[in-house]
Length: 544
Image (cartoon, rainbow, N blue to C red; front, side, top):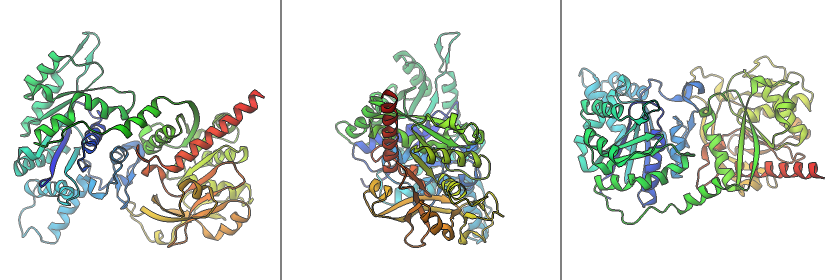
């Protein structure tokens, strides 16, 4: 293709309709037809990135290979497309204004009055086209956060209007995702909210090319024709998006509705035949037809909001399908775990994952969960803070180092087995200052990790500030907690294991960020398999 095509996904009527899933599903269909596709997210909040946001505010913070702290939708993009994203795939209002103000301070605007139009909109347009100009993609899909009509989104909507003018109608497409509510008292689906949403979009100078309508009930042909007439789109461009049992059904549902076919037609692109979704549907078949179930405890401090651990939950879906198992995740708030109740909450589970997090709240509960997993031979996976809790638990209860802790929780601890990295000690800003992005790790031969990865050198994504304190490494190893993964450049410990335990692994990095439908993360696959072996052994004992 000589010219990159741009698809914009906007939302109306309500937030949380699933723009990210629709964008990822359309991208999957286009990719399955042979096009090179990427997706980016424009977020209207003023934070420079979500790195300093509490998970309760915006769900998990997703990290890319190049160390960008981004919106969790980028996780969906990678899981669907199996293509890495980068800092160019997530743009916030904060980043836009930061860049424009820096240019103004340098005098780059030659004394002009700096305004939303053209300076902010030009910056947005530049960011939107950055991926397209790289020459790596045929189609760039841009998801615009928020809902049409929000004050915060107006500069982005205006930028889309200008881009349609700049690039031409045959090179741009607007997909508007909206809600068709069902009024049970009247027994009717109502189109008026969608009509108003499209009208609001038109008041900003943009005509939606395709309507994707979220609904709990099937849209009749008459209702589609009504929407087409009043929203000024073709009937074939009214796409039903009915509630699905899993997000991984959505590409097939969109294929049935012809979303990809209509999009290609409007972009004047030729792609004969149908998308090749064979591998995708093999995954779906395994996911929907498990041969058995395993029960995994997710021990975390943000469990009230599922999006806080979105990548972990999706990784379990991928790993479950790979093992032909249904992974039933039991979310357990670490703040509610005590020495007295830990056995009742955890001992019936087949595996225990202690999740990432920051701060002191709920720490002692996590340590108790690690202790129970270690003492009872329950398969254990600790991620980031979870790995650090494993080190602290071992230091306290095996090495008998009373009060062993992380200096994040207790700066005055007598035994700082987890400590602030030297490079972090002079840093006062919170945003973008942690150890971020992909780092190499050398694996010890014959370790669990080496067997899992089938390689001696791996690369995984990080997001943390505190590290395993190497001053305690020899004592911990002599007592049985082995460091089996080291960063080759810094010597920092990345993985700990207990060889005497059936399956016990703690990792400083975030394996969940790299798990996709096409490539389930090997650590999660191995952990789920270990949990199933443990469950099967328990069943055999109970039947004996």
